[in-house]
Length: 399
Ligand SMILES: *Cc1c(COP(=O)(O)O)cnc(C)c1O
Image (cartoon, rainbow, N blue to C red):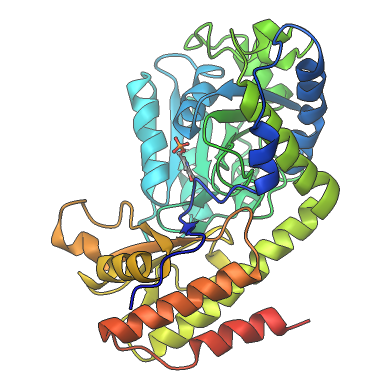
């Protein structure tokens, strides 16, 4: 019997669930974009954005998605022909490296595969071979949303410092900001990339670059920068009309203001991180139990290396797609497709799926999805261990 009516749940790793408060805040007529409330509202958000990224430095805001931020970060700091190192741990790291190449940068890509994290020793070795200091930046993805690995950013900074190299550290936090602990200043990150539609619980369409003085110094000589992507006008909210290079993203700003109030002023970022961790652990407890009696596996075996925002899973093809289809049709939950684990269209692609648990998520949503997957395994006759729902409720019940 199909039971998908009621409120559906998009449990994919972005766009994430938006709080009704965010949606309501956006439901209004177009505001004056030259002066008045919107200008003040925007100024009030900048310190809150910096609080989420744990930086006292600058944030530049763009009308763009995460792919736009990949370009913005590189264009404001680098020149055609510059060399960068990209530490790749999945499809998103590889995507950023590809963008860097197309911008005319020379990219040394070190690929750590699809089931593992970065080995800092390899970065140290690579930077030591750069005796004439040609490498200008190290690019790394905090959480690769395709593999669900969470990389240790402080360890990357320590590796750079251990060699005495002056390469800047740039981190893609598009999946992790507002979900997994991230400490831009304390971890020595020079440039941080984020977007609105994941941990920030707002529709896709806004991107953020946080940058410190080291990065702004690089901006002096960067010849890749174009007028629209230049971050310089975007650190001056007094000139609101120039800030966005034209019309601001009016309704997104109202939505984001509400989301930041919830994250920074009501729940608090430390609790937001702790909530994501607990909810992720509830999922992992269930995945572990199912896996003990069947083919389901988490892509990242070591829980210490897993993101709290998303979990990537494998089942034998075609069972991953069959399970996703079943829960959507029968329970109203939409799970994420596998990305970058197998070529799309290849039969093996159907062995992968992902569960997003980022942003506006609570315990009953997680337990509901665990129950829905349990029902799918039973209905589809996929072998699985028993007791997963109870394992998840125990994690939620713990003090
Ligand atoms: C989602 C995501 C991106 C791409 O963001 P878009 O808004 O889809 O362009 C890049 N990197 C990571 C780590 C992501 O999770």
